[in-house]
Length: 264
Image (cartoon, one colour):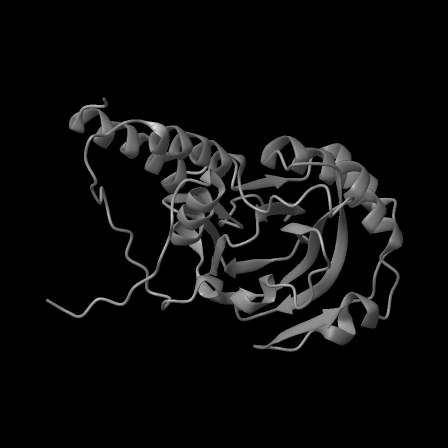
């Protein structure tokens, strides 16, 4: 029989995997070799899309220029690094969803309007622009990763970031200049064989929850509540509540319910 103290300690270890998920997001800047490769590609005329103090989102199919060469670079170079950092479940590719021309700092520019089957995450590529403000933060649970922070270097450079679906993305206001952001869906090659769209540590938590459920506790106890602010619909959950729900269901030993409790 598992002692009460041991149950509590084991549960806290599980919650840590959910609160601080491993490899939920990543941020990088282009290397000198990357920058040289990009300079060799055909240039784009972006002038028609720039509007002061607005955000313009153009779907990939509606762009007035061809991004094929850039997309090929993304898939042959950046996708390999995303694979190493995020450790997705299987082979995948990046498919351009839209380009956002943002002089405001609009978080909506980070969300792809269409996600094809097999999409497990998003890759963002920021073109080099002179801009102030606009810092971006990716968060999942209590894990936070900042991107596009102010740099002292005179010459701006390309940078990129990636995250799993249901990660929370926030953007600070842009106070000067603008941002050009290419947004790619990260799509599994075989969407029937590979479906994981969350960090691998969630599956690790599910394994521990399965072991915890199989142990003889000798007691029935609610160890810890998980308050949510998104209503009582499973479809609207995100962040830590979503990851906890996923781990509990994948453990296959718990029944899960959402409830609205009256104030005390």
